[in-house]
Image 1: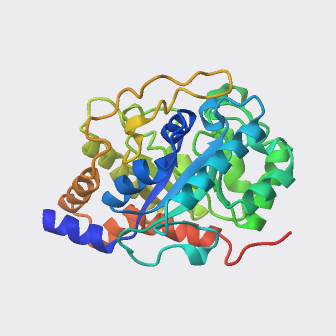
Image 2: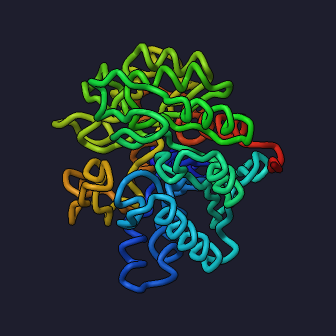
Length: 351
């Protein structure tokens, strides 16, 4: 079936629904430049990725480069990333409207959707949300693992806390502007609050099924049904701590996929993170807030990460499991692209 895998890879717009820039920031702090092109573009394009959602900054120390003021740290990383984009050449571009989304595979080209992973940089001011929108931000992760001014993260689950009044105002304004809301890392109460408050579908960009592996970062069947009823998508991630120990990476991920399809259907699930940029990450679960120092190395990831083969193995496994070509297309990118097309503005909003 390798021929089938290559055929589908070549004809499918593949969407990586979540990526972080931690490793790029490490290199920036060492004085390197041009790292986006050298460290990401070749890897992602080689893996067949056409569109990637990038958390440029957010709630954690790693997302803020250690800055004491969240807004200041976020803006520093935004400046770094935009300068890196400008130096990367014509093969990379920022998606600002639904019309910028790729309609078909364009070899050698990568489209990027800019995101915040957590609302601390907004500093309780809707003007900052609008200014990040003007800078190109089109996905807003409502929280990381801890509480911020918008909502409680998953580590605050015992409080029973969900959206704050400011959080509700952010949801409303994000809907107006055309910003997709991401509720990965959120508390269970916050999950329900955001889905119910939003007039648009939302995404869980990197989590798995709690029924398959019981972890607070994963999504329960009740949450899945709520998400799907609003038109949302769950993006699956291959972090072993969320897939479940003792499983082969692809097999473990497909167990989650099969379950989600059984519960809500193929239209509401995607594989959004196969780790193509994570070989140098400092941490995934270890930087929950400004007081948490990032670990010196990523632990527990399969050795296969960072090469261009996981995507081919995933396609082979999906086909062997009986998924049709059209279903594989939905899982690899069609569902995420449809969600972004619905959420993003048809033209940029002014004011």
